[in-house]
Image: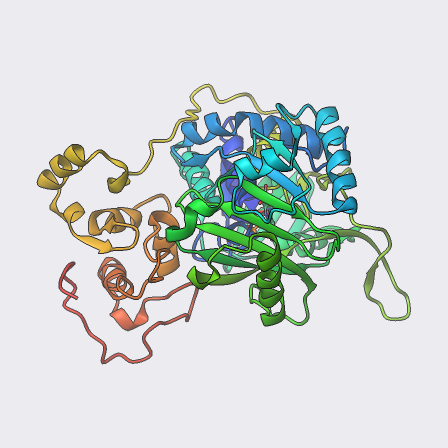
Length: 503
Ligand SMILES: Cc1cc2nc3c(=O)[nH]c(=O)nc-3n(C[C@H](O)[C@H](O)[C@H](O)COP(=O)(O)OP(=O)(O)OC[C@H]3O[C@@H](n4cnc5c(N)ncnc54)[C@H](O)[C@@H]3O)c2cc1C
């Protein structure tokens, strides 16, 4: 039986950062992820904003972590070799209700210690964001906000964890947990593992994982929102993360100038029915377009290249309804981070229903979880921990002369596969050997950016499939897009000669 000090359940942002921080201690750590890759859940579909800390209640752990995280974010990204765009954020309003909210958030931000936060009048707002509608009333500027690529951030943390001795088990869904006197038996992927401690980072499933050892006091009631991505052609239209505080509070809208130069638009909020997770809703997309037309009228929406849906893991305290037998919410949403630890299950920590700003605070939350585990399990600091990760080569970020020199000695980097993002065959092949490496098209996309550009993979998909097939020694038609049985090609007659550049 495999034996660990700590098993982290779930390989999203929180699991990856918890694993990384556990490596700071002398703890034999494993990360179990149900899917074939990391960062495929909430962590891949979110707004990608690094929040300044003006939105959260003063005095809460959430505010404290968020302010600290945003102020240290650039150095954390440099440490992990991850790109970060410290563009600042601007919350804008167009009426009385919005103005009151902005003034309240200013006071909140000041109380939380947000650096440089200030209110701006119409002229100043329009000077910073000239494409906003001229009726804008007020802006709340926070220079410490920014944007990052969530999966690039999470995967870097995971690689750093692996580099420091953490073992990652993919395709390893936890199906059972049994409490024993001095630890836990974990059933996953048909095997039994033994561990002294567990950190539950199972995202939308975190309540179900906790339920395996105790009755739930908190459950997740998900809701959803939608996203649009605009092409890099119009990337310059917005320079800051712009949060709109409309008069009708049901109509949310956020614009983000992404690290790759696109604009990401978040909007809509609706409850989920059935299991139609991560899908978009036409009415919500339409409402986003209507809002854009009134707040940023000149934004050329014909340049939308993609839409996607996202799911929020809202945590609520619950009690059992005796008639129906169902757990029903008894209180309003929980506002601080919900980290559950109980005396009946020692060394079992659950990060349950962690929504915004969970991306911003992923390292802080991971550090907190690791410190708790180290304290409970009485572990010493690992003096050999190395916090620095070497960035993966991104050829088009190099100066031209250096690029040319590199390609001369490494010809695969001279074959451009993704023309929209200028990603070479060499970088794609590299991504198959990261720790862990990509095994699906979307895995390659998350690691290299190939397929995220204007053509959304129209030109590069088949060539990347070919490389994946060769690496996995499988026929091309068995290459998956995103998870098991997500085949692009439905017919084995599709064949390629498996030589990069000859598709
Ligand atoms: C719509 C939306 C927008 C957001 N925008 C922002 C933002 O702009 N800025 C910000 O700071 N934060 C933001 N957040 C919050 C942030 O994205 C989340 O806090 C973070 O991604 C949560 O990651 P996670 O690791 O908890 O969950 P996930 O990424 O979902 O990871 C959980 C993992 O657990 C795995 N798993 C589940 N069950 C099992 C099992 N039985 N065995 C093994 N593995 C299992 C899943 O496969 C999954 O990979 C946003 C959140 C949402 C929902």
